[in-house]
Image 1 (spheres, rainbow, N blue to C red):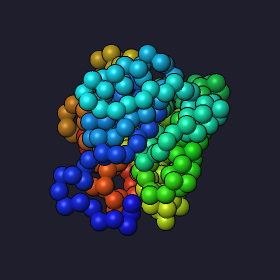
Image 2: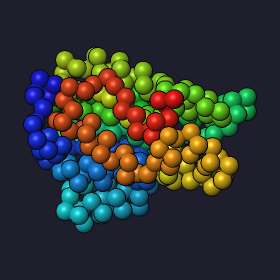
Image 3: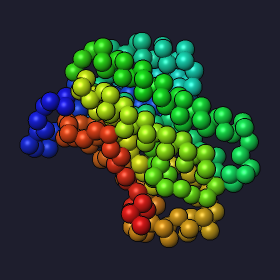
Length: 258
């Protein structure tokens, strides 16, 4: 894929005939990514732990004329990953999205919370990316791997020591994978959103003081929405970005520009 010239028109943003897998696809940014890639023409494999969630996403995509397959799996379990990637007919795009956060003071972080976030945000993310890279390398033709990072992969923040650590790790993984996999035509980038209104953020966004603290630090003057990341996901997945690898696309409303 990296040897191809980018299309000269809007067709370069289409994903017709491509197969895209999204982890954590049942809600929030994963759901938004699944809907966006499906609308661009990809066959979507929506992966999450909850059957009802992935069934709902796939039903919505199919109702819009798209193609989608729900997959119930826990990305922290190696046996689930072997099953999922072993059954794929093809893989052209991965959105490595599953992750979580537990905001709390650094001095209060328990070993259980530390292990949970490292296990999901780093270990599982690595193993998912490794499985996807193996699939793409074996089938030939290249591919696009998109890690869901965060603006917190570029800066620090109070009460987010572990989350920042995990997302900085993802940014490092993105660069290393990009360099190593480029000869195979596999591009690797990260997507780094600011605070987006999703189920993951809804709890602490109910605090008016915290919400105002966030908005005051966003030059655009508002929180992000799920729709704000849709175009970015399609762009990084599509032939329109064939020369882009090893970088982080910050959908952060200017947070990290300050």
